[in-house]
Length: 74
Image (cartoon, rainbow, N blue to C red; front, top):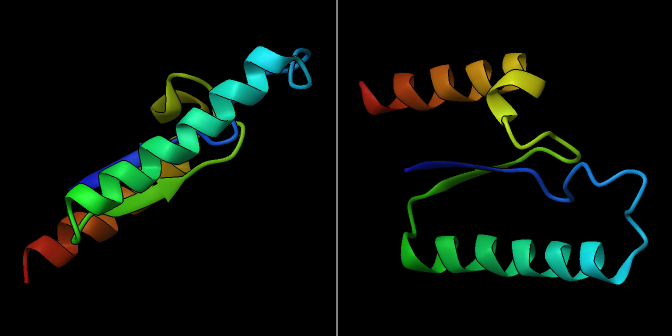
């Protein structure tokens, strides 16, 4: 399994608001949960990526996907 997370999220200009901080905390918990449920998961954290991670961080997403898929083919 390959999972991408934008943590912390792109929250400007509201990053210091309580809601944004709570969301960031929940995101970290979600990553931990995913890792706990699947010991072989590859988690990629892309700080400040947009909701559409594959658009805001296209090169990084493609690189990680290619690496992951190449390892699957072994």
